[in-house]
Length: 263
Ligand code: NAP
Image (cartoon, rainbow, N blue to C red):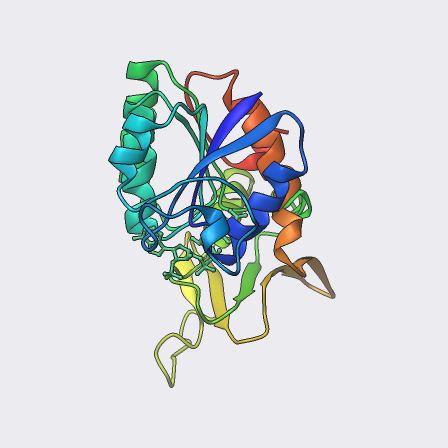
């Protein structure tokens, strides 16, 4: 039985994660970290399930008082990083869905994990279809060095480009020969029109209400294009990957970054 703390229980991902934990017999929700409702129970909050589970505003107090195995972190980047670090310092293994951690933060967490011999899994996208999209894109980039990534998310998203787009670009870079794309003399009438430049390829971020999480990776070469596309239609798409990560995180003593390294 894995004892779970969820950070961000009122959020779209957090509330889905509560359902995930409730639907598996090998997991039990023991506490939540929220920025409101300190001292209340989940059952006291109208939009949350009727559970006798305590809510803490102070993560350190939560980690000190509650006997837990895993933190599922689903809040915002700045707070999520603090929660993740503090959990590891208290012997609690983080499964992090929160996106927007910097490379330096991930390096610091990796160092902490190896020093404390504790597992942590961070994945910018827990949808298995998205991981396959990244892998297929990495394969295609070997033959198609010209590539644009277009990611589309709801307009409440804080980070741009998305963690998934960054991870896709990093994976493509491993198999793609460097190429500065576009015309050598091209000019942007409006700054940003050509998107962000990552290793010579372009990343475009669309933010609109109504979207969930979508990405297209478009490759072009003379006479043909190849599009690899993934859509998360709702947040249930991320839960199978989170479940896999909660199993795996108990077996490791390091930081694993990316669901593709868990599958
Ligand atoms: P959301 O609906 O806005 O939920 C975020 C939650 O975090 C809210 O309940 C918010 O509370 C809470 N929060 C904000 N500041 C906090 C703080 N200081 N301490 C504790 N809680 C705090 O967002 P979401 O769609 O659930 O996404 C949550 C995170 O998961 C984001 O980083 C998002 O990019 C990421 N995400 C990851 C994946 C993946 O597969 N890895 C997929 C989708 C989303 P308030 O309502 O009071 O602001």
